[in-house]
Length: 80
Image (cartoon, rainbow, N blue to C red; front, side, top):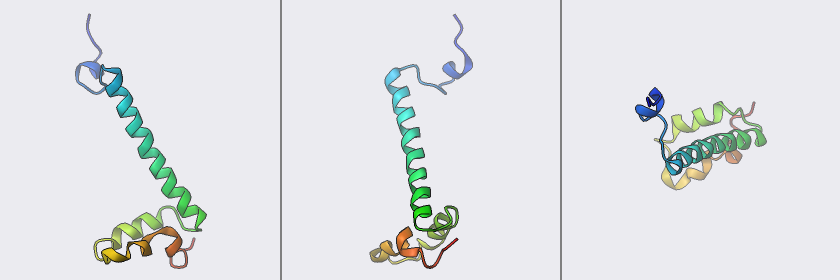
């Protein structure tokens, strides 16, 4: 019996547990993304602008002021 390429090459784990772990990771990643988008929208921010702004400024931002980069604290700066 010949296995399909995606099984032989390891793209899809044969074990149910490993496959479930991959699916769980994917679902959690999507959940986090939707959470970030939803939080930005609830704070009247553009869902694309906020993450870009945070990533552009986080390296130079003081570590003890990380809360200033949260969407509800940036709502006045990054409105739609």
